[in-house]
Length: 276
Ligand SMILES: O=c1ccn([C@@H]2O[C@H](COP(=O)(O)O)[C@@H](O)[C@H]2O)c(=O)[nH]1
Image 1: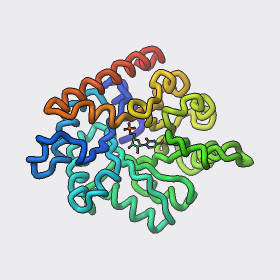
Image 2 (image 1 turned 120 degrees about the vertical axis):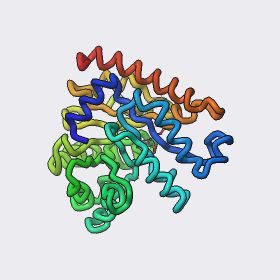
Image 3 (image 1 turned 45 degrees about the vertical axis):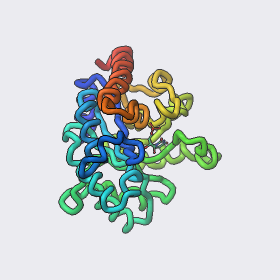
Image 4 (image 1 turned 180 degrees about the vertical axis):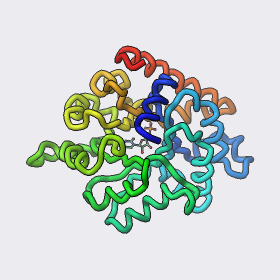
């Protein structure tokens, strides 16, 4: 999906919501266990209930890989069920030497080979250029590089001083010399909203994938106040607060309600910023 198509989707849906498909088989409603693949059945119903409210889905690879072959099948089926006009992000946080990165890129981007052709992948930056750029060989695919994460532990390394600012600032500045804002996004946690003004100095045009609203307590209003751009420039993720809004037979309706609340706030922010 191109940058222009993404911006169009945001305007049409009046939303920049990404629903995180962090589907834990121990947390899904009991009645789904009668289905051949309860995880896929759960995701299918979540997607059906929210697809008009969001512009992206983000399965986190850990939740699928932790179930071995069965989990990979659930991931492939989920990828195939995500509507093609919705940005599909695999949250895999990969990073390794070039020839290994080639294989990670193939795993998630080469649909003919693996059955998965996600639009975007999250990547860790700390092995540098040769570990990040292999993903760019796939035309039209996005790299989403971890910059300033929502985690408490972000302070351990990401705030270290470098000659060029904090380490996360150096990551953003350097990575922006490797690819343009049409291929490169950054992860910035909603729990770090006060940093958004600063980050926008180095990433004025990049889309930011923002996890941390909902279960982690980040503020959507603050993220928008400091991070929104003329093209929106934000994809805000919520996983647990949406998909586990109810543990009963009404889980999909409850997920829709939660997604709708976020979409309505996003619509207000898009109007306030003059984007719609
Ligand atoms: O800095 C980061 C980077 C990634 N994540 C991921 O986003 C979701 C958040 O889930 P919630 O349930 O909405 O808290 C999850 O997949 C994380 O692995 C993050 O939280 N922070």
